[in-house]
Image 1 (cartoon, rainbow, N blue to C red):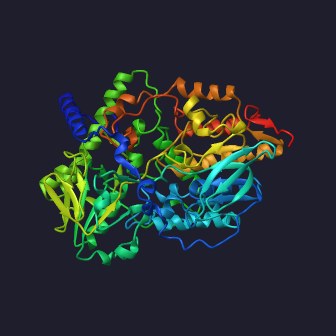
Image 2 (cartoon, rainbow, N blue to C red):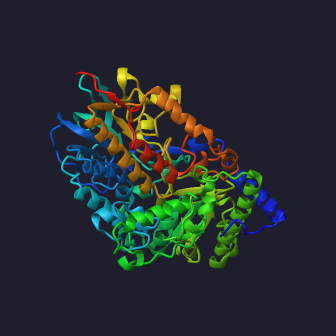
Image 3 (tube, one colour):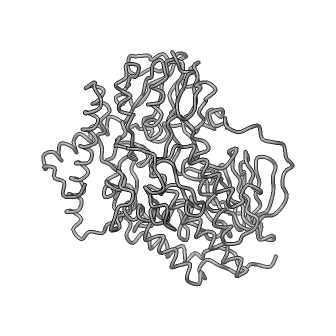
Length: 600
């Protein structure tokens, strides 16, 4: 698809009217408050169904070089890159029972990655592993996380089934005091937070949710004891049962086909349909991806990142729907184009977007037999308003006699719950089981929610500092007043649809900072002036996307319809340029972030 795809002005005007009308059907005055934090409202939803009972151990009172908060790919990559820098004692603290993060918790039927495995799975060159599928199932991804952790000997000092409860800088020790929910109180010279963007699971705040007497669970805590089966299917426990699923985003698109195979009857409660494009998953061989060459995986993932960041390449090595539609990601990620004629660019962009979404809607019409159901499954919004999904079985599931789509747009979601089921409009749908595929509070970690208090120099609380001064950092990693604290994530840096690539670049950078601090007997802490300079860099070319997201259908990208304000929130030139900037900066003196250690 190119920007030359033509759509008439009349068609575009009609699409705008339709998009706006469909948006208004779904906007709720309570915005993101329509959701409940599951662990706060109903703590049992957040319990770990996969871990064995944690073994008893004595609380730790020792000291490590680096404490890493989080055992997902961010934490594992931080540990691996620290090992490559020669750092000795690295302790990963993870609330789950093992490594994996998102892929530890999410084990629902049908789970796969939606980014090609050969670019999504990190450290393939270093581990010698070649994924079995173009889009890996969740278990293959989880096993790879464990593989990386074990290759770099990260298990020895790791603490599982353990949550960090506070981080406090101790000036005299020139270290952080780390406390946990299991009585630990140990020191760490450096702390890295790698708590991810998908950690705090959420539930819809449906009136009467506590009244339902059937079985319920969240997809990130799948109850195979009730359903039977495995992530590959075979959910024999659902035979003859009336099952409901709430949520039709990326998770719902993957889980619905498996539920449809085995449930007595499946009700899919949908507020907004996803755009569902072709997946075309298949088994792959080393020859398919050129894995006989040294550095093949890095070459492939760099190629993918360049394409989805709007950079030129000679060849598209991945050649999937992400790369084919890369130009439409301009509104999803910080702007990567600086056209002189902005009006002409926006007009061409809108026409290309309309062509793509017309293609997606036409696919629905071709596949779904019932015309009324097909109409309800058509996405009426722009491509970058919601994360695109990919499936070769989701739309087909609605052709089954045991599957019913329940559209809740006009009632702004399920109206209420009873002891026996859910109510939409004038109809009560009696259920034996209700499954919440409602995802996570994106970008909300313990650090930003206040559940993990961080106290820096002079006892200043990080959350209070953020509220008072706004987000401030150098490159998104380090903050004045919080020595030797490095935060991995997308804030004030650059992101990508392939987030593991971003995390790996962040891990390389953070590990290099630790190595430089150790070599120079220094602490890592940027000056206020360095933070100001970085804010100025982000503000200078900040993209004008506020209007775009304000017009989008409600979702987590735009605060459930409230918009996504412009501002210096991310590096504006894309991930490729950002990674290059970091590499050049590391080759310099690092004087604006390294300070001499104070005598203890």
